[in-house]
Image (cartoon, rainbow, N blue to C red; front, side, top):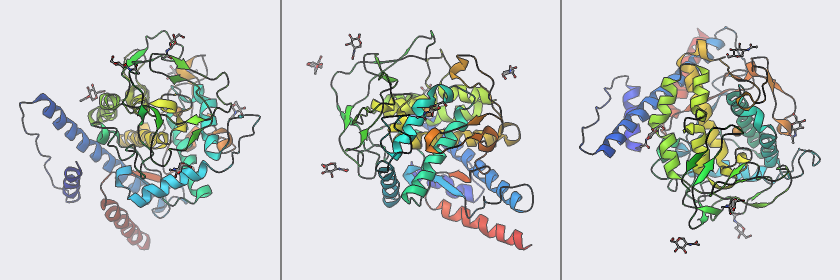
Length: 433
Ligand SMILES: *[C@@H]1O[C@H](CO)[C@@H](O)[C@H](O)[C@H]1NC(C)=O
Ligand SMILES: *[C@@H]1O[C@H](CO)[C@@H](O)[C@H](O)[C@H]1NC(C)=O
Ligand SMILES: *[C@@H]1O[C@H](CO)[C@@H](O)[C@H](O)[C@H]1NC(C)=O
Ligand SMILES: *[C@@H]1O[C@H](CO)[C@@H](O)[C@H](O)[C@H]1NC(C)=O
Ligand SMILES: *[C@@H]1O[C@H](CO)[C@@H](O)[C@H](O)[C@H]1NC(C)=O
Ligand SMILES: *[C@@H]1O[C@H](CO)[C@@H](O)[C@H](O)[C@H]1NC(C)=O
Ligand SMILES: [Cu+2]
């Protein structure tokens, strides 16, 4: 796959390449993989278009249109695929997370007795707001802001010099265990849990609706993680809404109370393959004609029997808190998964920025239950004790406006070093002109 994408990139830069027609095969599995490669290429192309459009926008703004003066090519963050990071860059990211897990919390104990570290502030906020940030009008923007405040904390409180990396699911659909994010090495976010024998299927209910639960296979682990940087990490809060093998839902009476325990994983490749392959991801971008379709498909339409890319990534990590809708930021894989969701939203917006940049649909409550007002650009969201205050939806819809100044970059190494300086040179010339 590396050589394949690098080849594509070099032909992209030359602006002249016919995409190779997949070779006909007699084997339907190979044919499916061929289609998936086409999808990987198309996704790459959409990512490149979004990047070009965003950089064009910045340059236009710098040339005198209304703009966010602080967002320039120099200050812009570039969020990359975890695979494109060097081992040293991965370690820097991991060390910054470990640092947040050592710093004291800012949440008062009276508000969340279980919040023992700065990292826990994020978990407490997500648990506390879960019914107001999932299947709501705020879902995408709230999580965009939430992972940004996490990236800020890594930088400002733990000296992290990099930018938040994303998890490119499609590259891992053949083996979660081999994913560089979850392979259990020192440069991963720890790997699978210890094997729990004879786990039975999961049954995933959809909130309090009468939609029948989704039945999913268990993974290959199930127990505490056995290696890697988070082997000694202790979860502080939850479980809050944890789906267990056998179909039981486990919950503390107060999920914000202190309940220390190991982090469990149950890597489930089949869930990732079925929901997060390149073809599924591309279809989400290509067939979602409005924001309602996009966010509904990404989360799995109720009653459709589908998880969507959002549910697929969370559940494929598995375990505790990976399968806990409320407490799942406790698993450090959360941030990279949601960076990929955010990347797709940005790519989807950039397909038709004029009509999509400020598109919102939904209300302030999970599937509008209980009924609540429509979310609008004037709706304010907050991240609790992670960062005090609130922010209007209108300020968090663009990745280069409001508090944000970032883009996502496709996975190949080297290309970054070519693209951004080339744009900077162009910019200098234009400014002088
Ligand atoms: C798991 O299932 C196998 C085959 O049914 C059985 O032999 C084994 O005792 C079971 N193990 C546990 C721990 O239940
Ligand atoms: C986990 O704790 C053990 C025992 O204190 C220690 O030897 C080991 O280095 C720790 N591992 C990590 C990754 O922190
Ligand atoms: C699920 O709950 C039922 C009823 O409380 C119980 O009998 C069963 O043992 C539980 N299963 C697991 C896997 O905990
Ligand atoms: C890819 O995803 C789509 C949509 O979820 C699914 O229908 C298809 O079966 C998946 N492909 C594979 C090989 O699992
Ligand atoms: C809320 O949004 C829905 C869907 O876009 C729309 O049909 C409805 O009229 C809106 N309600 C109000 C009060 O604006
Ligand atoms: C939970 O949300 C409520 C309502 O917004 C807020 O008053 C409270 O401070 C929040 N608690 C935490 C721990 O964030
Ligand atoms: Cu969430």
